Image 1 (cartoon, rainbow, N blue to C red):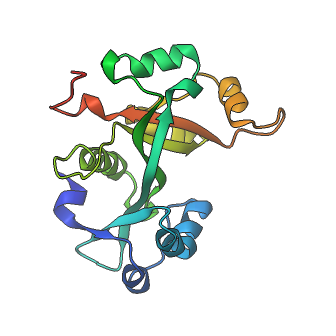
Image 2: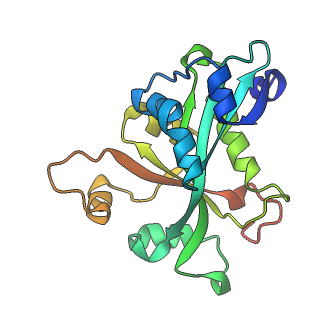
Length: 202
């Protein structure tokens, strides 16, 4: 049984939703602050759009929320081994310097709805959204700048994302994080071609 599809309603995260719903709490202060205070300005500045699933049994409860924005993966910026892996399933005649991607800027599940498999359902929904025939733009990859903590990294790895850089040292050099400073996030991606029935990479 799918909790999100059978017990929730998908909505854009609007000012009306924020006014009528209880404060969203996913257990992460940074994410909570974004969805409470910054999400509308982010949308108004055309930086990204946010969406949520609202619980049908109690519409004041936001079960989960996420933000997406346009992005790209620049193959030439990657180490050779990672670049070869990324390009492996792309026909040679379609090789280019960058490839269209959607960036998951923020994603969280209400802490009162943990342990129900909602995180996986939500990621499956996001992936399927961008291979839908009605999607109005090309999108080859889903990218994320994940918090460099055990929980978030394990979540994305379980959902078949891979690291953009195989080591933190490589990523530190690419992102120009000074030596000695913590690497707060890790770049990861998922190749949507594995889900697309029309993909040439199959």
